[in-house]
Every structure is written in structure tokens, then in C-alpha cells.
Picture 1 (cartoon, rainbow, N blue to C red):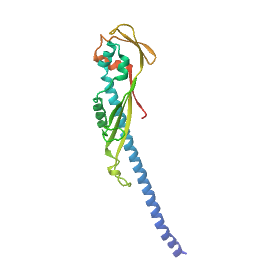
Picture 2: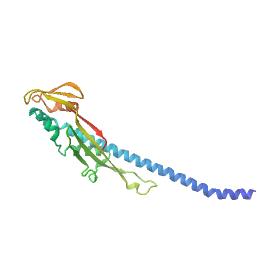
Picture 3: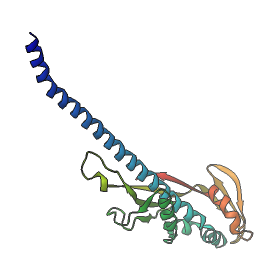
Picture 4: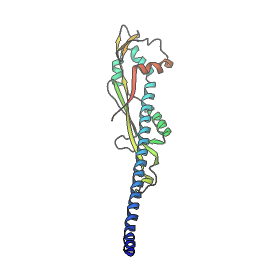
Length: 209
């Protein structure tokens, strides 16, 4: 009986080793999935920050052309036709860098990695990024060289209605988000006041692609 018990134990030991090895592999595989998910989340955070930075920088630069449109009673044309320069994308790269990523100029869906889509009352900027870091070593081959990519889109949205009351250059009344009481005198304007004023007139936020 003793000899038979020892024989059964000897047969069970390899099965036990295989089960433990399988469990360890599964544990490392789940860890690799977690690493990949963390890297992907990091890429998405960098893309969100880059898109918002580009949109906010573009909004900051709207002061002079916006006031010129008020001076000439051409605000409707401004909202329909204005085109941003590439410079806001410099801020997109700066925020991507702060999150250990770079603008992904090779993204086939977004060539150059930072692009504008224009529309009446709303303009969109899409930023694509690639992380500077990889998923890291794992039991899954290739993860040590795998970078994560992501993209995000932010909008600059005109949030007001307006009414020209008189001649070009006269104060213009705005109702923003349904609230009246904002009047802008284009003859009494300086860029320093635009930072606060722009937030009341133009919303910046992320949207789904």
C-alpha cells in the first residue's frame, strides 16, 4: 500500500508543476495586459492634454481678429471663415512632452499629428500622440518595443448670440449661454482683458472623435 501511494504521488507531481507553471504564466500575462492598459491610458492622457492645449492657445490668439470683426460688423464672416495658423500645435507638442509623449506625425488618420477642422460657430483640432516609453518587458513577445498611440479632439465653440446696436465700432451686446449683460466696446479693448473675456465667449472642451 505504501509503495502504491508513493507511486501516485510521483505521478501527481508533474501535473502539479504544470498547473503551477500555467498559473504563473496567466499571472504574468494579466500583468502584461495591465502594463499595456496603463501605457494606453498614458497615451490618451497625453493626447487629451495636447488637443486642449492647442485649442486653448488658439482661443488666446483670437482677440485681435475678433475685435476687428466687431469694428467692421463682420463677426458672422469671422465665425464662418477664420483659419488658425499652425502655431497652436506648438503648445500641443509642449503638453505632449510634459506627458512623456510626442505628436505622432505618422498617424495616417491625422497626417502631421495636429490638424484643424473648420465649421461655423465651432472649430475642432485633433492631436495624435505616441508615448516615448514602451509597454516594457513581459511574457508577451514584442512588448518591450511597443509604444502606445492615441488621439483626441478638442473644440473651440462660440457660445453666444450677439446684436450690433449701431454703426461699426459701436459696443456690441452678447448673450452667452443664455445670459445677457456682456457688452464689448471694440474701441476700448486691450489684449490683457481677452484672457477672461475669451472664456465667456468661446468654450474649449474635448469631444468624441
